[in-house]
Length: 546
Image (cartoon, rainbow, N blue to C red; front, side, top):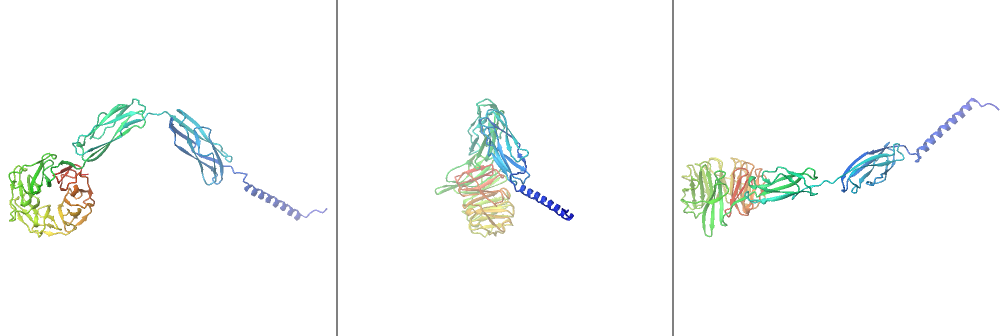
């Protein structure tokens, strides 16, 4: 037999090597496609510890979420969950991580039948693919004794006062523990308008609460009493106290046919109001006064009021002098707060003209307006009154002056005038007003006019131009007063009082407690003021009417 050439032997050797390599590749490929050969993974479980507690006999509604994952993240794995404790419940017993998601299950607790004590068990998470299976989640649970609850009843007290001097009922609060046991309790100090009969005690107990509306401003007030007791759950307990004092308190109400048109005050306590009594065909004027800011009484109108069958329309106080004007040209003057009166003459031939308003800037210089466009001026303290040419023919209802030169007057049928030279010349103003009833200027630039249809007109250039302000009120407005450029009030029909704190950009209607028409509003400051009108009614506020 002849030996094979070397080249043939090499060729056979290379063939055997190629066949071997191909077998290895085929075996590896078959291994990758075989699902029965899972890739080992590592379990990731969180949280690994659960701490829970509850009061004996009380169900636990908590649920704890357990997250189960595996690594490598692109490998899928099957899990099983189990627990032998009867007081632990699992939302499901198996799950799968598909390689790009995280599986989870919930642990819940059935513990209402467990006695007081501490309990420990575990939840087991297993996977046949995991190299670190099983994993255990430790569960620690404590069942605590029931603690008695603190109770204070009632939990809310509401008081309503029509006036600050109204006597309020005594209310009683019961304090107790739910096990009827004896526990020390204390009460926090409260607002000065609330008085409690004691600040501590032993349950079960009661304490009394009284409120005093006379020491706070009108409006709504709320405060809370806190009752504390060591060793009791739900401590502290709260008792809320609310007190509503009507913002406009009635000071006096006279008779149905009595009307107050104007009022003014010399100081915080001493004030006067004037008006008209309409008794069938007989009309007469009257004056009421207060010396304490609260109680009002009739004044004895002597000796200069024998002709008091005419109504009084306006009142003005300057320094220690008081002026009154009214129907049929009545001008009355006093230097001793009404103990005696002097009669002043208008100097007019027609003495039956009705005078509507009076305004003085000093005790020497002032103006009166009235029927037929009448404007009178005095420069000698009222000894003489000189007519000025207003150019108007309609009734002038009101006037306002800020100094000896600058003033305004308004009235019926769009009549509105202004002067910058003390009344030597009166210029007609135009604006969104119709029948006007009052005008008020806080300075030489800023003023308001009110009147028919709830109209409020505003100027910030001394009356050269006017804009209408929205009030959402359609009745007559008879009076307007501003404390400063922002805070003001307008009042009129049906007991309406409108309030603004932004110069009239927005107006809100206040609760006055009356439906009687209001003809006068006067404030001592931004909180303390009065309204007066029909039935001789006067109401007072110390909260700005809010």
